[in-house]
Length: 247
Length: 351
Image (cartoon, rainbow over all chains, first blue to last red; front, side):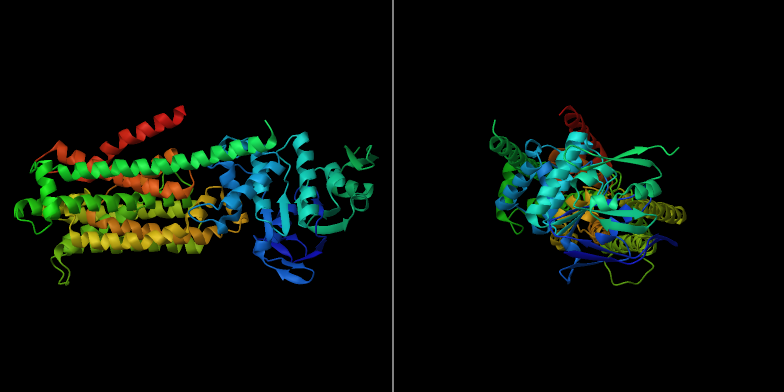
């Protein structure tokens, strides 16, 4: 079990996030959901150690340092003329010298294959689409072997097929490696389907951390997203959130 | 094709790409060696290659005193200085463009060279009046060195106060450029015609100023910088992935920028023995990125080699253009470098 203690986070004078305590089981996928401006990105940056106020991370009571956390910021474009394999290798920059150890190349190759990127290894990053870049950058983070992985909207630049594929692969990776993955997600149905736990953020406060069913109640969705939700079950009995405009 | 085969094919392609880049660095090295020979063989005295070879074998104390003096006191120092200065400017330019994420950054465009020019102008104007125990030929470069470091200190101070984001550093650099340029103009305005002529000659960077003492000083500073640069190679490559990405990979980008900025300042100051040489620091990085990509393991050596190539070929061209009085190499660099840049841009676009 990972415990994250966050102080109050400010930007300038305004309070962006209230102090909060998060608990993430090892080997699980946790979704952070909330309307725009709820503080999802701020929370993830703080967990990654990139804000002025430092979050305290513990695993089974022992304090972890920043290097144990992998963080992938919200989608951005890489314009560098670097190959996909170079990019993945940079995930373990600290272990690289003038030549790259063959074992490291083999590992990078295997993890690229797990995420369906085998064909792209020698391609330049600047020749990939936004969605492909996002997948490569996710693999780069996983290559660091983080104990805790914080992802800011990891599926935002992808089509439906790749959204499902990426979240399934992430959940499988978490189960297999024991990494705790925490990801900001916009799509409540996706969050309900793939996440083990869901954190609801609203106006800088932690509203709840619970199972998807427990967290995404009609009242909560109505109050924080300002929509009239219709909650259904799909054929796998997973929660489906259909939003309707408030009358 | 099976999954494993596809994987192996793409990893092989990646290895081939790395090998090609290594080969490109090797080819540049060979080309440079050829140009160095050409540079040693050109000069107003028109010695034949046979005589030159004999002189080289005989060493600096050889029987033919005149030939030995020409080779070891004039031609060789100029060539070695061109290698050091070109290499240092290429390295400094690439590192500046990487840390500032700006393709127009170079020691010239960010005011380091203007500061050096001001320092030298000041030394030339007031040097004789000062009773300092420094030989005349060393005073101008020494002042240029100090002025470059003070320009760095100004930019550094701004970066400490306002943060080391690329925009802040570029703006501060441009402010420094204009500041030292106007100071330099002021000195020139106040100078007598004779002094003015000397100042202008210094500002046209020239290899004629080269001698072994200057080479030892410049070479020592560059040699000290090399291990520091090697240590930052992967960090610089990581920075090319974008600020947010580099930070989230645990890289302290502000600290990296400040460290590398100091190294570039030292490199630029080291080359103040030759006077102002623009263009090399701006163009060599572009050539390097186009030829070997942005992996700084290849790009840094290639930028250094390109810088040296531009300067050595400029030296050859300047000697060929006017066999009597060599045209200052600072004037020729752009002429010699532009065809090279054009070739790189044109072939790069096609592929």
